Amino acid sequence: MEDELTIIFAACIIMLIILGLSVNGIVSKVLEFKKSQAGIGNGSGTAETKALSDRTDMVEDRLAVLERIATDRGQVLADEIEQLRLSNAAEAKDKEKLS
Image 1: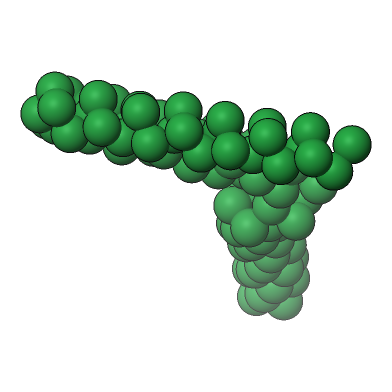
Image 2: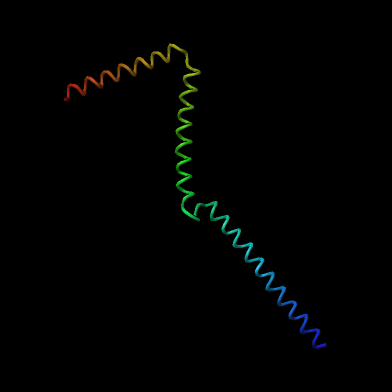
């Protein structure tokens, strides 16, 4: 009877050790995943995220300009271009006066 209890006790201890190691492995994987999602892990995630964000902003700005060009009437666009030319010419004259 005493031998049977010793075997049962040893089996319970072994099962607790296996269960503890399994839970430890799962928790460490979950924490590693959350760190990588937050960008804490290696530091390169934040630089990549910033670069992608900057590039996305640039593409969105270009797309907005293209949409405006595609939907504007020709005369309005021509007037805006002419206005920009005049303002650039005025700025150039101001720079020449300062020189």
